[in-house]
Image (cartoon, rainbow, N blue to C red; front, side, top):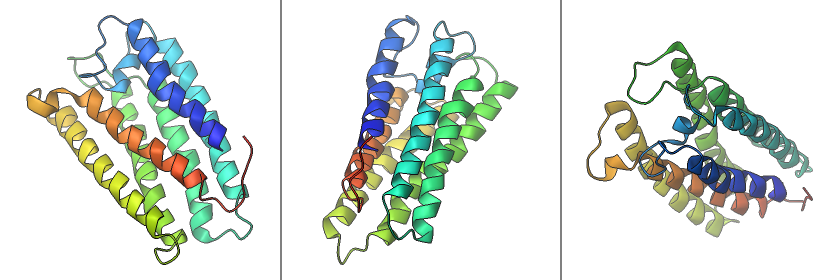
Length: 205
């Protein structure tokens, strides 16, 4: 599981940064990651290939997470599925339904892109919340404190990102929607590394 999270982290941050260098019109600070794979992007096929790998890695994480528990509670089963749902939504859903070109009207593909991304984000935010009930505060206080801190920062960053995205605000902190998107994603990858270290059985891969 740790290896899969590491590969995802590299792909999300360093892989996408490299693709940005192949797309001169793209600015990682002001543009969301979705615009790397917009309809007329020169790197669209690479984004779709990464989307397939992204999905496969999250399926493996879901399986590894489920397998790490000897006694599998309902919460463990749900979270295992949520990993897969997130992989499907952000991996296959978002990359194979490209967003409309920047500054143009919303297309049918872009609508599906936003729907898949929305479902994926609900799954993503549900994972740390449900794990707070699996790992009780009495026995895992530090884990709870770190989870609350990361969730708070992720929610603030996501809130700024969504306001900038849907209200088309390009002033002040709202100008940097790409930056804020990466901040809340970084919070979740830090959380995933933290969660992997909490699992009952150490897993390879």
